[in-house]
Amino acid sequence: MPMNNAVLIVGAGPVGLTMAAELARYRVPVRIIDRAAARTDKSKALVLWSRSLELMDRLGCTDTFVAAGLKVSGASVLAEGRRIGHVGFAAEGTPYPYALMIPQSDTERLLEDHLASRGIRVERQVELTAFTPGADGVDATLRHADGREEAVRTPWLLGCDGAHSIVRHGLGMTFQGDTLPSQWVLADVHIANVPTPPDELSIFWHADGVLVLFPISPGRFRMIADIGETADTDARHDPTLEEVQVLLDRRAGAGMQASDPIWLSGFRINERKVRDYSAGRVFLAGDAAHIHSPAGGQGMNTGMQDAFNLAWKLALVAHGHAAAESLLPSYGIERSAIGDIVLANAGRMTAAATLRGEFKQGVRNLVASVVLQLPMVQRAMGQTLTELNIAYPDSPLTIRGGRHSGGPAAGDRMPPTVGEPPVGAGDAPRFALYAEGSPDLTALLVRYGTLIEPAPRPPVTAGAMWLVRPDGYVALVARAGDHSAIATYLDAIAVAAA
Image 1 (cartoon, helix red, strand yellow):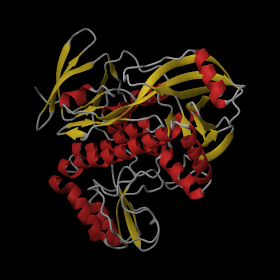
Image 2 (image 1 turned 180 degrees about the vertical axis):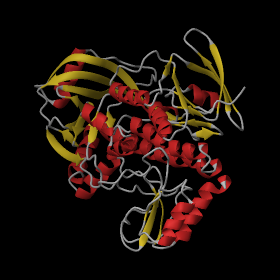
Image 3 (image 1 turned 135 degrees about the vertical axis):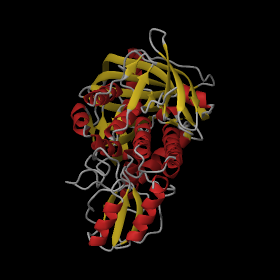
Image 4 (image 1 turned 45 degrees about the vertical axis):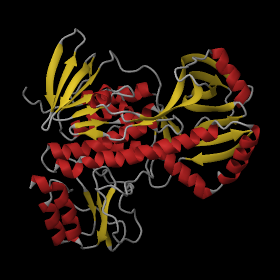
């Protein structure tokens, strides 16, 4: 069948929508399908962290999200009737020093509206039923709501279709990991008389288990709590409003009043991940590749950042400006390493919160009350939660060892500069060079005009240059004037396109 040049995205949750928005911005034709008749009406994933908001800046729609959400400045850990620790999100060097609480239903709505403004609509009730990868494309079969089957051929197939991904199953990839024995309940409700600040997450450690309150909007909260362990991995308990009230009274203190339930559900925590994020021209992103504890609220953000990572690489290859073998293998290497870190961090937070036994809980509370007062620990936790410390030091796209005095190291995030457009903004994914201008530098920028911005940005410090990828991470640091280092790097990216 003839090749359709549109990238086929399966799944129109936040990850698939982000992928479609990024590729469309970079002028890559896309087609996005979802077997559901409508987007979710549930709150589901609630938080957009600072790093995700920075990356969304390049789409030009961050202000819309901020206006629709609730800014949360920090999180408190409470135990035995007192606050034993606090982590602030006012991290340095970001225009978004907070967690943005916004229901997933709104996130999907706003992303879908953004796509519609570009003339792209989600094809609903369209299901991928089969696909066959090839060397030059992927043959796929789609089933429409009326039963009609459609044969398509796409240059790349992107599986953003969640934990039960048909794309992952079609590749024969297995989820490696476990289902935790603890049972959890979730309640999206209105709560009156909450004693903690309205712009903070509140984590209550209790002898019976943990209870967490996430503010969603004034008076509305997400409550999650563990309710014990079971060996039955299929066990779920959907709570009643009365049971939610009992949990609040016992673990968070009397006085609060839950009402007007919007969503009550039970769930289990899976900690699973694929080994490989791609096979040939087929890629996995988001829950199709990794699922983990909701502790830290990292799941949706990790998936959306999968999309930001892959989109610029696909765009450069699709437009013939870079070699597929130079860029695309780095996606799985980079994002799998981040997936491992997120799984480990979320697992540790869950284990600490669900610790059983009076003695163990006492030790935990004592240690936490000391450690969480340390500024260094508070900042490290804030940087981890906001995802500002995500880095790719061991990526094949990172050249380590360059000399620099101050500024980020190779693989680290380049903090945005107030008044400058984000790196990677616009309709072409270009690298940025932070360096002093010179005639030789101008010649280099002209030579690699399809890969790099046409003008340098001010250097971070004197004596060094920073080459920054279109997703805002440092590719290499070189001595000022060492233009050959920049040329060598870009030659390697573009080698097959020459």
